[in-house]
Image (tube, rainbow, N blue to C red; front, side):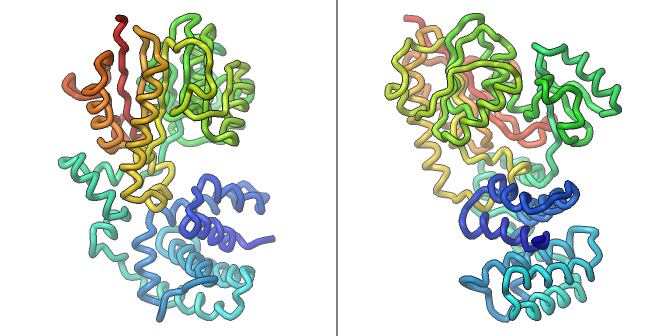
Length: 429
């Protein structure tokens, strides 16, 4: 069987060298493991490395005579895994070093075993504090992102970054078609699963993450896993009976399902650009016994796949930098680049303009992102309102102050992910 450290190096190589997201790369490597405990350790190593990457990279570069290039990059990633174990896990150092050296053999780099052993023993002998000589190193966050967060959150940018390093809690969405939230909380309590009610009507916060298989009637559709912030989408869009509703970027389908749980009589059209991810939407609908019209298409070109009438309500969960969910996806810090922000803002603008045309007069559009950057949120909506005569911003009672443009949730606020919402109303004339 493939050594666990070798699998970790492969997953990290996919992310850092090929730009694959960890949520895709990790399950590919977990397939090679049978025990749940091993799968959990593999995840812990990969996620941990993504959270602490600059400091570990720096420590390894200090111990290598020359950087590893080309085919040897996989051994560089293996050293990262080794170093992470020595600094951040309770794995005994002798085991961490011997297992990592063994992984080097399995990766077919017999000639590098001495190097791996030497570097890791050297680090272990003098476990000096990791470097904090620059902001990137202190905060384990790329410089461009620190700069943007300082500008957006001058008073609490350090806390925003810190929250991105925390381990995210597990939230459930109670399916009100199945039982009331208080009944589900009682069912959890009966199994001694500690949980509490969240701010929105269906949200439940677990004190400790649990395997869904241990949750009461999960596979029968009694509840879904969805962050507390994302659960506001359906609530804020507030669909009414029999309305025609569009979920414009629907995958993986949590918000689509929630809309149908709130108002099963709506005619819901769920569209996504990614056919593979659309399959996930169908799986989620099936588990909850819900139905929607699923379309593989582009939300920036509705004309090409929809010949029906305009929509009463549109949920636009726009493609974004995902800077609000770094605590769940720490690889975002290394996959995103500074220039992506302007490109994403342009794409959001196109989709928003286009969706607006497909909204009925008197209709409601909810703009949402899991970003914490104003360029994608407040600034985006400001610019849209300035040029769109029949658009009006609806103040949300949740927002931090009535003067705000929309509601910006920062990571960790009420234990939720970072998220943004703006509700727009279209004039009736």
